[in-house]
Image (tube, rainbow, N blue to C red; front, side, top):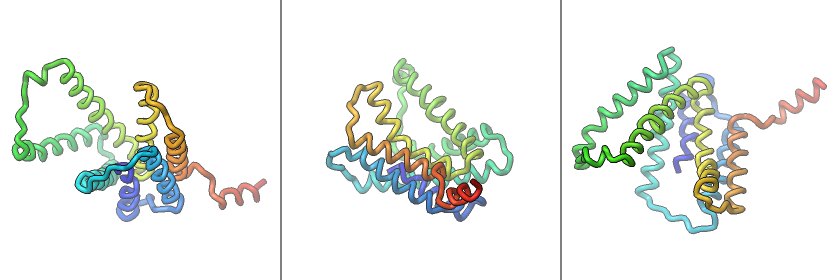
Length: 206
């Protein structure tokens, strides 16, 4: 469900960002990638749906699209990428504090200093949070919000690849077909496939 974030990003960018307009290629790529991701997740098994969780995941995808578009706008002001990311994290933590009280959060210092917990926190803090957000924001500044967001299509692809390499899980024919469709969708959305107009121009030149 999170992989639908690029369509939200594209719609917002079309109306609020200059130079990032919707195209037929993007929608073709989106359809191909979604078909591939569906095959990877379905894999011949019954899909378990929960409307509450599905709605929250869809909302998370929409919020991520808003974030990407805002970071593209902020990046256009010439501000430092790391400084912007630090400010985003600071405000995020600030607005999370009321939720901690409502959810009855009670941290245990003894649990936090255990090696496995400490290593996980360090990875989540420096790797999955700080490094990922800094590189994402930098990519948005270079490629644009839409082109960067379509790389989210690769998350299920990479998950299947690493589960086979690390966990030795078998890769099925449906998953392979889904991975191929996902890559094709990414290439279409990025404009890597030549258009008929481009072929005609190339033929005329030759």
